[in-house]
Picture 1 (cartoon, rainbow, N blue to C red):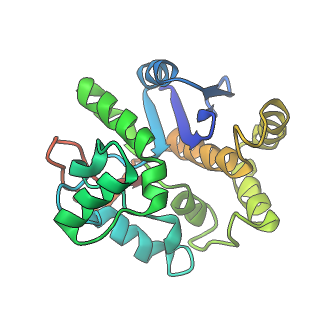
Picture 2 (picture 1 turned 60 degrees about the vertical axis):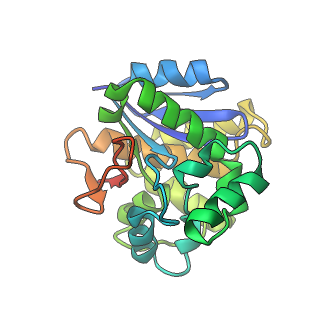
Amino acid sequence: MKTAGIDGCKAGWILISFDEDPHYKVLRSDDELKVALDTYDRILIDMPIGMEDENYTRLCDELLRKKLGGEYAASVFSPPIRPALHAPSYVEANIESYEYTEKKLTVQAWNITPKIKTIDGMLQATPELQEKVFESHPELIFMNLNGGTIYQKKATKKGLRHRLDLVSNHEEIAADFFREIKEEFRRNEVGEDDIVDSMALALAAKISVTKNLKTIPEAPAKDSQGIIMAIHYV
């Protein structure tokens, strides 16, 4: 089974695989992303999949915030509700969000809305992708790799290094990948946090071949388009 982890970055998307032939690539276009989604048998991606129509917060996000704890809950934000997904501007998305939920869309959620819309469109256009492309969250993976706790926030050098070490304990090539990607791509294309996040997703995807994927919540609901709303992890 071919596995990979994908995280969004300013250049587009960064993909890492720890399979028998470990590799990484930056996907700069929707076409490159679609080829990747078609190529791999299991992908964990740090991007909201499945959206509420009227509820401001998905149950999976609410439960994940509780699991990560107050200090790290801010790493989980609510994606736009589906009626606001195709709004042409932040102002109009806010209007749609407030009309249904009486809450405004956060700037963070709006900034990744184009990527959410891209993934959502591909999953709807090719339903079989829903059987192999799963939403995950790097901080949850790091928490599990560290025995149920998070060391420090990854915005700090210690926190970033600790996360890299957690992956390197399982995949020795991770440290080399981290250095090579930093040298190959500018910071305004791929950030250091993007690298370690995609590594965590790649590691979890690989592990999930022999250990079943779990979900938050355990019995996830589907959205109005039939797409599961859940955070996947091992």
